[in-house]
Image (tube, rainbow, N blue to C red; front, side, top):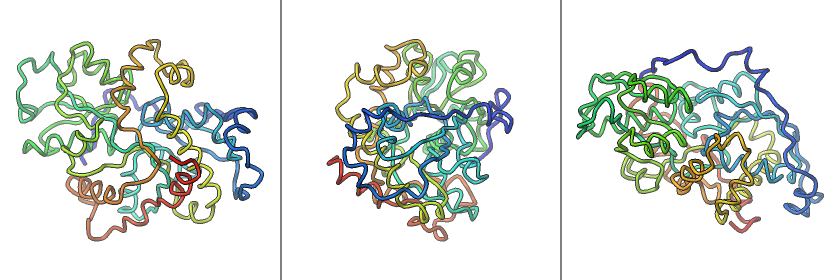
Length: 359
């Protein structure tokens, strides 16, 4: 995919990595006892203290992770996590460089990296669809009628090679446009994205919530494609598109099965909680800074993306093929015939967690 321009300086650097680290005391003893009363009988973890790189931890795509952290589900599994909060597209870099043991990011990274001879494996799913919407600026294109009108225009995405660019590329392709027909601009997933659209520097935007819900509520964009719903994803890609997940180097997964099981169990426990959680539960659980000072907006955004959240942590059987097909359309390095999808994900751990928690 065509690398996007940058609207501003990248918000991440090697020096910033250390300053962004924070050790997370995941839960409390009381929550742990309630969450998993048989923790003493659990298999011994190969590694209990881990560094986890998360791409935009405050985003809805990682809400299951946040829930598992805040409610003590990881602590109940015997885990202590040091979390590094990174911009979009940087999680796999942290894992491959050894700065993190595991990452929370987009599933398609495992396919892209295998095409570059880097073996990563996803082992529990957080999102069953990309929680992304594509909207056109009402300011720059007030009479917009067709995606074909975006030829020669600037489109904001979170970062190069991310799901936001993949969604945008697919929207364009359905109207006969190629990546070279537009200019992709990296704007992140928060204030830069809003500023880029509102200042007129962007003609369209493919992004996450709460950015998209905020722009939609203010009448600043016209949503022309919405992957936040299962139907919208099927219409856009023709099949299921597994999204946010936890992944690690294949060798790590193979050598640390009990540790990966504990991580998957924490996420699946969080997914079960989310199935019945109401607005009040969400507000009480999510850290205050994630609400961006506007609880009503946060809950409106949550309602938009709720359907995108995975149900049981399991990857759909044909999801990998849908992602591979989409990537191959826009990335020449990805070959449908040469990649082994079976190495990019496993349902082994999520299946056990699903049975245990009766999800």
